[in-house]
Length: 247
Image (cartoon, rainbow, N blue to C red):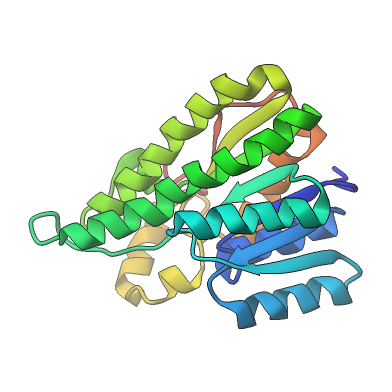
């Protein structure tokens, strides 16, 4: 599953799923451009990848800002000559019951979770078309498939990513570019760490495999979809949820 010679750009790479994806793709041989808002955490990640013999460069960016997205991807392509793999992972939550949800919280989640993916795809597509090879992987969520009370904005953004994935897959498939989504279930990250112990125990009871997932579980799926082993898979949503949602 070697990614030697490939260049991967990962958003939301400073922590959680994005960070582990960067480590895994670097381990498989890819040069990784790691992008997020927290420069210090990105620098630590680059140092860890470099110490392990990999190649990585940090780009500080707020993916909710269109001009920053454009400038970052332009800089990455200028430095590496191309982007082969795009992992749209950046995401936020602003949870609230729909009748109390502020418009600003709706807009912020849609902008960061969905619109940023569109912007990143738009910017990397020319590079992928030129070389007639590309892998686009959008990190969605089980809640984009089944919904979640108190997360109308988050669920809508993640469901939107699934539709975006399939539309892009149809647009660029003839150029040997695949576009897939990975839908994590309950994964142990900083985002889920703040949940109550009662909520976590209730959630685990709904998972046939009987455990919370790890960021490594997601990174493994991303590495597979990035590789030539997945060259005939596109427009697909790969559920990595321990059986929490089937079908």
